[in-house]
Image 1 (cartoon, rainbow, N blue to C red):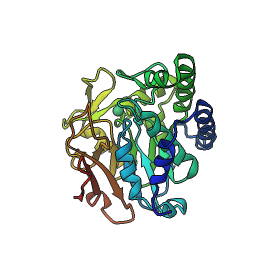
Image 2: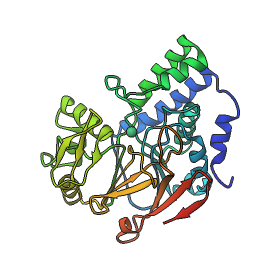
Image 3: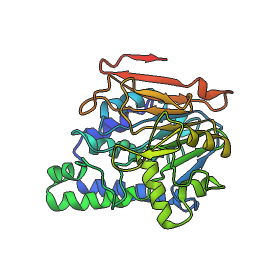
Image 4: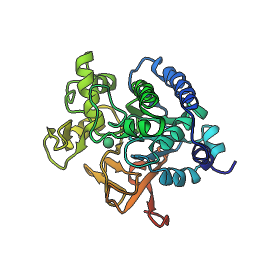
Length: 314
Ligand SMILES: [Mn+2]
C-alpha cells in the first residue's frame, strides 16, 4: 500500500451503520485507555527520535485529510518511522464531519502508538459545549433522533478519553488552543502546569488548553474575545520554553489565511488544515517536523493545501 488514502475511501464508500460506528468507538476506547493508564491524565509524552507530521483543525474537511494522507507512506507509519499528530476539531461544519472523525479514529486504532489524536474544543467536556456545535444535529439527521442522540452520547464519552497535550521531550508542546495562564509560574512540573493541582483547577486549565489563543502582548494573559479562555502573551511562551526545556509550541484553533502563522518570535506555530466555508482562509497547511535536526523549529516545512490542490512548500 503506497499511501493511506484508502482509510478515507474505505469509510466514505459506504454509509456506516450505527452498529459499525459503535464498534469503532469501542475499539478506540480500548486504545485510548492504554494511554490513560500510563497515569498522566490528558498529558502524553513522546521521545523526539523520529519525524512528526502535524495536522491542524479539520472540521469535516475530508478532502484536505485525504490529501495529507496521500503524502504519508503507510509502511513508514506502521514501522514507527514517523508520528502523525492531529490537533483536534475533527467535527462540526459540513456534511463530512462523521467520515472525518471515523477516518482519524480508524487511523488511531490501526497504529495506536504512531498516531496521536489530540482533543479540540469541538471534542468538548460535557459542561462546555461550543457554539455552533452541529455534530449532534448531523447524527440526528442521518440516523434519526433516538439513534443519533445515542451515538452522540457514545462519541462524547469517547472524547473525554482523548489526550489534550503532547509533550515531545526537549523539543515541543502540541495542543489545540494554547498555553494555560492559570498555572503560569505556579508549577514545577509539566504535569502540574497542564493538569493543575486539583480537579477543579485541572478543569480550568483544560478549558484554557482547548480555547486559548496567542497574542503579541507583553502581558501574560487577557480575557479572550471568544468568551471562553484567555489570550496568552509572550511571557507565558518564554517561561514554558525555558522552564520545561522545549523549543516550540504547535497549536491549531484559529483559521489563518495562509494556513499557518507564527507568534512569539516563531515559538508558537499555528496550523489550520480545513478549507472551505464558514472560514475564509485561502490556504490550509500541515507541517513536517524533524526534531533531530538542530534548531529544527526554524526549519519547519509547511505543506500548503489550496483549493486547486496545488502543493507548494515554504
Ligand atoms: Mn478550535
